[in-house]
Amino acid sequence: MTLSMNPSTYVRVTLKNCLREQEEEITAFCFDYGALGVSEALKFEQNDPANYQPLTIFTDVFSLEVFFQTHPGDIFYQEIYKKFQISDYEEHLEQEKDWLEEWKKGYEPFEIVQDIWIVPSWCTAPLNAKKIIWMEPGMAFGTGTHETTQLVAELLSSAPIETSDNMLDVGTGSGVLAILAAHLGINNIVGIDIDKESLRVAKDNVLKNSVQEFVDISIKDVSELSDQYTWVVANIIDGVLLKIKLDLLKVLKPGGYLVLSGILEERWPAFKKEFIETENLKIIECKQKGDWIGVLLNA
Ligand SMILES: C[S@@+](CC[C@H](N)C(=O)[O-])C[C@H]1O[C@@H](n2cnc3c(N)ncnc32)[C@H](O)[C@@H]1O
Image (cartoon, rainbow, N blue to C red; front, side, top):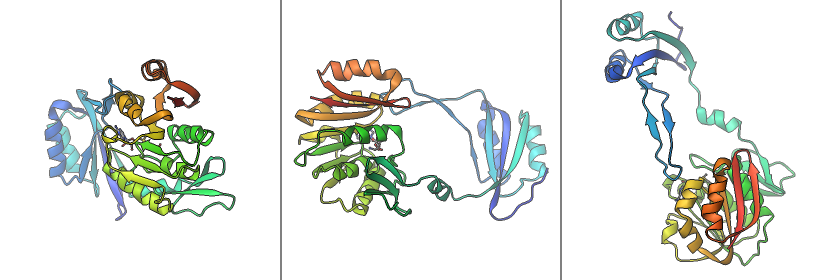
């Protein structure tokens, strides 16, 4: 079957039941016939939640997606069937899309906590939005739409914050929680992250929101910090929180508050024991959204 073309389309071919042992040869063959790229939908497993290195599961038989600008020609299929043990294929004509523009359409202004709205930087703020967090998340985590971010926002918004307090946002991502904290009245906030791109995005967002007087974004690792904070916020997956537990406690002022999120419900009992009970921390409030738990603790 030959599909019709125009410049804003491309062809995606799915080669089914390819043998793993022939993977390299099949790929080279596709490129010889003008493929622009190939991809395989890999499966992953992550046994150790404290380790951000999931293991790739390679199956003996797999499907390969091959991308061409136009139909590769019947000879491609005749030859690939002859040469390799591929059982079937599908050919789809795809429209080229600006994925970023598509994604932007689904990200709209919303009220994250009472009176504080997150407004994508390309949108107009709703008239009833009293306080606005302008957000351009780019490649960083932190649109404000994720349950784990919302748990922190809700815990902070009902917490006993005083203007003399300071705050450390560990894993600031887009800077969304650091900027939110500035709206909640904290005027000495430090946001850190291990990801350079997040830091660039967070700095941009701080400027966009004109809170640079209150929020400092820094590349430091939490283990390097010597200052102490009234509020330490960390929305990072539970395994990592356990890994950096002692560093988080070291930067917390005596009597200070720790806001943790990113704890999966199924791992909550173990987390509570290892992080909270072992360190004699007091649970002030604990909330759940979807599969995620967030907790406000007092040292
Ligand atoms: C789930 S995102 C949270 C982003 C944002 N704070 C929010 O709530 O939307 C977690 C962030 O933590 C960062 N991160 C992961 N491990 C970290 C570590 N050990 N120290 C500091 N940041 C870390 C990641 O790069 C990522 O930006």
